[in-house]
Image 1 (cartoon, rainbow, N blue to C red):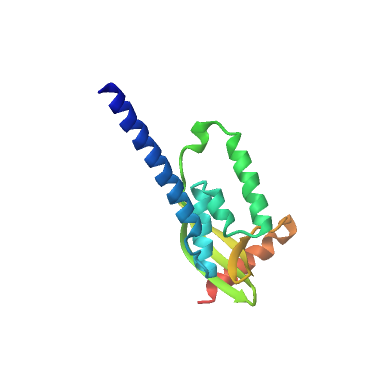
Image 2: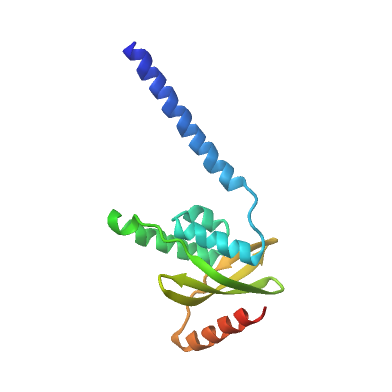
Length: 155
């Protein structure tokens, strides 16, 4: 009887493992969102929940490098510092497309503060992808804030 229980337990664990592998494969083959706004929201959701592989599917090469950097940074932190998940709360978003490029200005609520941010996207092989510019200089911060404000006013 004890051997039968162990055999059933092994079979159950094996089947759960294959379901998980199948679920992960199914997630990676699901159609991707494909508007600047839906891509931005989904990409940020994946980043918030440390699903970097999924976020990479919606990322330009620069953004993929950024994701790897964030993932490595998080691996170096103690578990108690990475355990809590904070989901980005977009209160407003407006995206402007120009050919194969798009910019999404958004307001994000973080605790009692509203933060203006922007996402840059590029259409690659028909799919919108989030880009993370290689560098944002201090000189451009003012113009970025003005740009975000102008995007949010275009409604």
